[in-house]
Image (cartoon, rainbow, N blue to C red):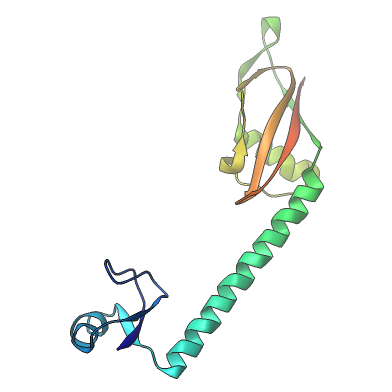
Length: 148
């Protein structure tokens, strides 16, 4: 009997898979517990529609990520910070501050967890930051820290 899995089932398949299982297993375990539905024509069409919708959403997210990369490529993010003697900052410049400045200066929204800083920014100068907009879609920008 063919069923469409509604949840991951160990030994059978992952959510959204169409699996061929015995009729007793399907009726008495999978369908009874809400883990699967019978693979009728209507259910198959619904599954295809859901997969197409999911793919469309992924395509839109990737297009937005590429657009953001085009805006941010080779840009300088300027951040003003206060420092003590010797040019050392009070604290450090964090990914959160960089994300806020990117949003203000360029109108690009990025999560602070998607900003990778190879070095901690604890002094004035220019530093490299890697912005990860989507899986495999990244760009590099420069963070310029000045006295303010």
